[in-house]
Length: 83
Image (cartoon, rainbow, N blue to C red; front, side, top):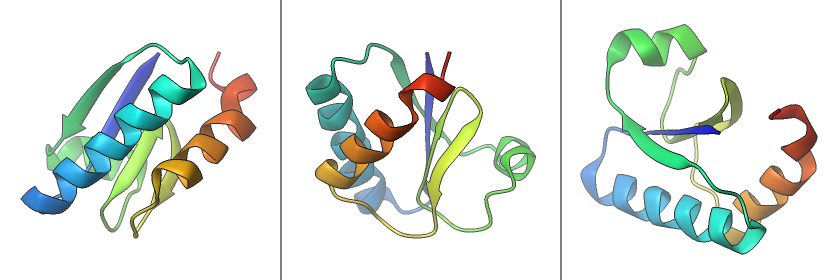
């Protein structure tokens, strides 16, 4: 599973990154989490504002932060679409 986090603000990036790691662990999902800062990649996904979470090419959220619990719900509700 390919998991990407997009953010341009250092402190927020760490917060989102940590929340994503916690949510993945809680959901029992294995995958490498990558922080994306390459503009071409961000544009490819159509993300216009950070932070954003992309799993296997699917944008789960963009534009504002989510709590660990909200990220868990997004992952659980969309897990069938990731494979």
